[in-house]
Image (cartoon, rainbow, N blue to C red; front, side, top):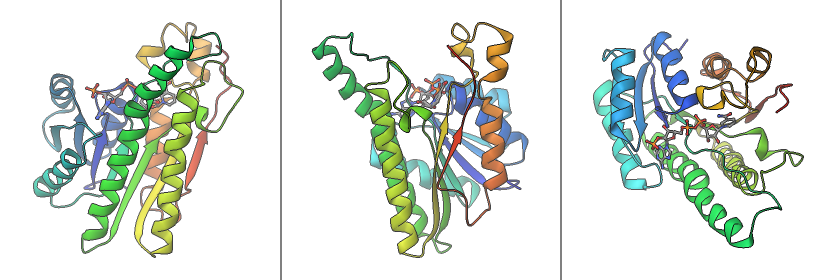
Length: 241
Ligand SMILES: NC(=O)c1ccc[n+]([C@@H]2O[C@H](COP(=O)([O-])OP(=O)(O)OC[C@H]3O[C@@H](n4cnc5c(N)ncnc54)[C@H](OP(=O)(O)O)[C@@H]3O)[C@@H](O)[C@H]2O)c1
């Protein structure tokens, strides 16, 4: 279903991004691995095998770099079919923190969570609309924190993920009004079973209950060619931390 497609993964060296890249590659896609640090990308590229992979160091908060990433992918593989954005990470902020900490963390989250989504998705839709096919898929890996208020410690992460989600939904709406075939989707996983979460998910039961990154990859593959792909999707779990 994605064989021969070209997928750019922004945040490819991360916990979720590396699994998505592996599963997409195993399913026959060309994978463009992208993040700010080249060493981790090269390691991943070697692991996947250099056939059908390309590593392009990119800071997704910089429009010119994202444009170059899209053009490099197109020049290498002939076409770009999807951009998956899975950058940034969680940091706790609760009412127990100091006001200065709240301000500093909000600025950091704006830079690390909201901007990569806005810049990468905005630049990608423009790129896709300028191609003859006017088609493409943009997926943002958001979080259940974007739509839930009952999670403790999410006073900065949650609002910034919510802003990124709202951007994707609003951009998708404009694309639909323009009758563009470019599609945008926001995915909202609960706690994901990754190497970084091993301390939190300290039992086999919790790991099994958490969202598996492979499930996110499979959902994307299943909906890759769906013209009516849902504009958002929650990956829920019963895991209690
Ligand atoms: N892990 C979970 O349980 C969980 C649950 C729900 C949602 N999420 C969301 O899923 C996404 C990925 O999470 P993760 O756990 O995989 O995080 P991670 O392991 O920290 O990976 C983040 C990736 O993003 C890259 N990155 C960061 N800033 C970037 C930028 N400006 N431009 C390009 N690449 C950038 C990082 O590489 P460099 O630092 O080298 O750039 C890394 O490859 C995040 O948005 C997170 O909020 C995670």
